[in-house]
Amino acid sequence: MHSNMNVVITGHVDHGKSTVIGRLMADTGSLPNGKLEQVKASCARNSKPFEYAFLLDALKDEQNQGITIDSARIFFKSEKRHYIIIDVPGHIEFLKNMVTGAARAEAAFLCIDAHEGVQENSRRHGYLLSMLGVRQMCVLVNKMDLVDYEKKVFKSVVRKYSRFLRNINVYNVPFIPVSGIKGDNIVSSSENMPWWKGGTVLTLIDKFKEENPPDNLPFRMFVQDVFKFTAMGDKRRIIAGTVSTGKLERGDELVFYPSAKRSRVSGIEHFGENKPQEVKSGMAVGFTVTEQIYVKRGHLAVRTNEKPPQTGNVMRVNLFWLGREAFEKNKEYILKLGTERVRVKLFDTLKVIDASSLHPDGMKKMVERHDVADCVLTTQRPIAFDTVDSFPITSRFVIVDGYEIAGGGIIREVIRDNQAKYRDKVIDRNLRWDMGSITRERRKELYGHGPSLLMVGGPEDPRKSEFAKALEQSFFNRGKKVYYLGVRNVLAGLDSDMRIKRHNLYPENREEMIRRFAELVNILLDAGIIVIATVSDLSYDEREIFRTSVSPIEVHTIWVGTAEESDIEAEYIIEDASEAKNHLARVLSHLNQLGVGI
Ligand code: GDP
Image (cartoon, rainbow, N blue to C red; front, top):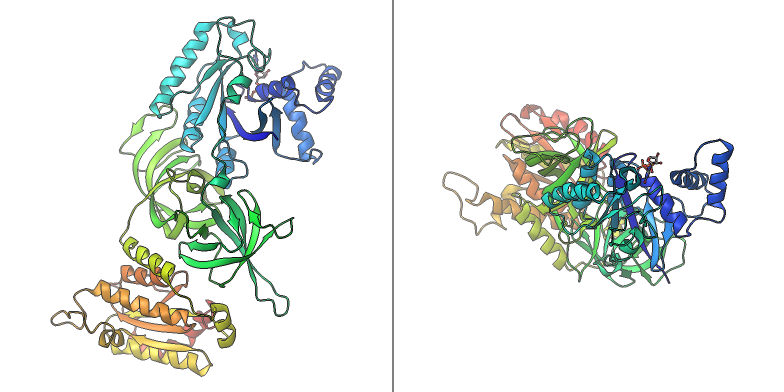
């Protein structure tokens, strides 16, 4: 059986990409029967000279009409394997393709017109390829016929462009002098360039190594959807997605990041095939799990016994910007990684360089079109991913500005923010958690609602807990499982070993107090209860500890009293604590809208 290799072809416009592809197909005998003659005849009829580039257009037309079975893919073949050309008309398509994984390039051709020489886009494409980790590159110095097949013209392109590649740490890239139009050195050796002993494009590409097949990598699948069966009595959920890398079998234990909730695969469905025993990379699958844990779109499924991914909301990335408007701080964008979609901001630029000139601008604080940047991003909530040095495929992302993809890149490392140590603890806790026999779903059915966390914050004031208790009463009256938990109660028991600050009710180590409080709340939530927790002077960072601890359950915050000195954006603010009781109905309806108690 022939193996396949995905190849992308890039280069400045008009440097000959389509011509080279047309030639490769024609000269390797890969065209459909009669295609060449058909296109030639059509040119003759319209009295225009035949071009190899037209072959590609003709094939694409057919594909658009759905005539060819395998659309969006253009093949040529050698004795060794089949090559699939990934058609990427522009930068954005290229980024999209690499990131969404529709077809990932294992190798790349970069066309440079010998006559015109290295252009800005020649450099940008080279940069993009290297950034996205396409290491097997070959530069085709095309249109050698226009420069009388002169060795020194070829050498000059080689010199110039390899200097550029060296600057971006890409070495050992082969160059080859060709003429797409005349067919020199494409499939057969050129008689016009006796000085060239380096073989043809075909011999060269046949030497490329196939990447470690993604099946051999650890299992990674971004959850795309969770389907519920609605048929009577069928309680199953199907977790669906496309496998990025690795394999999965029935009975495997999975961990879903960033929450690190565990469950075992009880059945596999492959769309199009009946119950396969095993699924591999690239397959769209759905599987059922033994424990109905809370899993959402964007979560990353990983096998327990394989290398875990990273989680975090602050990351150092390499990014390539293509948006008309610059990428700047204080503006919100959307980051897409796998099926994850999350709000993101540019936190800091460490280095911004022009992708073509490689001219660095250390002071630049925004990333303009065609710049590449080494920068730090912050996402609104923690997400799961890999870093490029472990698994490039699950490290690639794009950034959407408004409705358009405006940039993309790779994650280089996670930066540990002040939540990182709590996240680690929570992941560790979830991995070790011994689940009871009652699932979340079954509790929900019995209680008629799921768990929720309402935090009532505000300055020290007894009216805050009065309000929280009134809320508890209202939920209880409506038959909900609800529990009021004030910070005092935690201090009285769970925290009784902690040293209390003099002149203050709170322990010296307030952070640890909050952590324990959050862990306790997490258990109550796991028991399916609506928890109403009060803490005076709750800060943003403290609420984040709660968020981390109870993730992926959301935290709703109600503020009672002046919010002036608070760094929290509460969802509901009652500035005048004496008015709190009058807000009860409105708060309840607000919470109802958010799905609390439903
Ligand atoms: P693309 O935009 O990179 O896909 O470039 P095309 O393949 O469409 O080629 C652009 C133009 O350059 C066309 O008019 C081709 O005929 C011409 N061209 C492509 N390859 C060669 C070549 O090797 N020699 C000469 N003389 N012209 C070429």
